[in-house]
Length: 124
Image 1 (tube, rainbow, N blue to C red):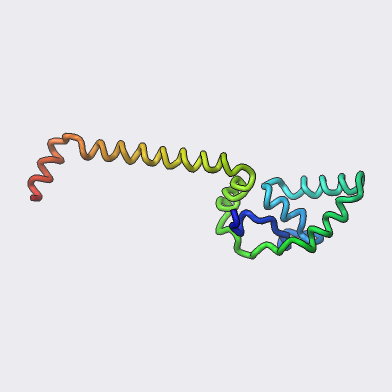
Image 2 (cartoon, rainbow, N blue to C red):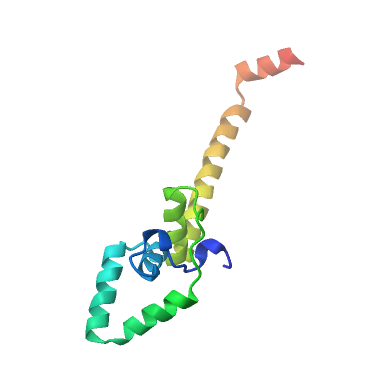
């Protein structure tokens, strides 16, 4: 999964300081408020998350400006990052449903329909 949409970035567009918390929020799909609150709580209690924040701020690349076309594509890729297997199952189920509906349409039109058969014969 080397897609640019499955990479953790700094989100400078929604940033307060360096964009690390907003990047994590974009990556996970969790509201950025809760990420910032968790980071603040951990920093006050442990101390080392402050260092980790600044290290991540220097290591992570900036998020490309047009990474997603719309909100639904953003939600889709967040789902892929959270659970690739579940996303694959959902896609597989969608294809099965489309295949089932297509088979029903095909069965309807290919079945022995006297009016359809007469129309086809008339066109020959």
